[in-house]
Amino acid sequence: MSGLQLMLPPFVACMVLVAMLSYLGLHVIAREVIFVDLSLAQMAALGSLSALLFHVNPDSPATFVFALLATAVGAFLFALTRTSDRTGRVPQEAFIGIVYVVASAAAVLVANKVPGGGEAVEKTLVGSLLWVTWPSIGRLALVYAGLGAFQYALRKRFLTISFHPEEAESAGWKVRWWDFLFYLSFGVVITLAVPIAGVLMVFSFLVVPAVIANLFTGDKRRLTLIAWSSGALASMLGLWLSYTQDLPTGPLIVCMYGLLLVIAGLLRKFGVGDGATA
Image (cartoon, rainbow, N blue to C red; front, side, top):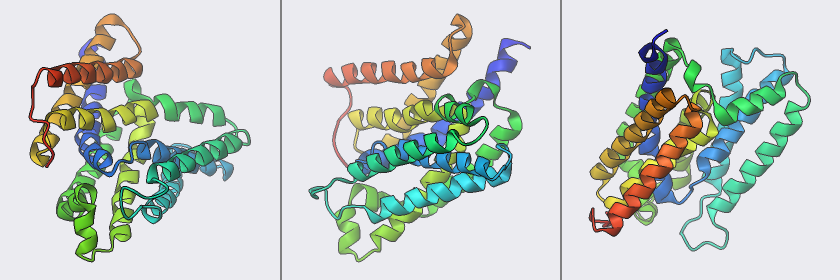
């Protein structure tokens, strides 16, 4: 198998993941819930492991249903614990951390009770990007296209609640209901991404491009373009170096995201970008 044949599926998978995750990352940064994807990913992992307790095949659709149900519970909790302002006595990030820790502990307990539990836990961390298949990429792209259309159709609601929550509340919107819808769609994205890319890479795809974009602009359209471009560039560099230097793909891609963030920070120090808020 040639290098192109080997690396093309991971490259396409990365582009699909970046297209969705880098956009959602803008919401995550605006909402100041940086570790929400880790928490939802851990809920999904707990759901998948719980399916093994009922002797469900790990690769069956039923396992995905278990993971999605667990993620829906997380989405409900995050919508319920949203603070009405940024000066609340307990920040939402604290609740997100608690959900992550409890879900992690529960996952360890379940893993000890099922055969292959340890391997399943490890897979959630590192994923299987190099072994992703075209049918898996096709299903991922199809579902993400549907979720992208959902986000686009409700973009005014979601963007207002993320970037200007006080306006949403003053308009009388049911913010917690809209939050639940947002986190539920977000949870579906994470549930599908983690088996392919792993928690570390998914976190990088989600947060780093959004941080880079926010360094340079506050305009929402430019935020999206910069986030997509920087995520795609970091992924391509990581995959290329992984192939040419024979290095582990996932960790190298994460490091490329970190390197790109450092370069972006230096450029911002030299006055590149407007840095204004929308």
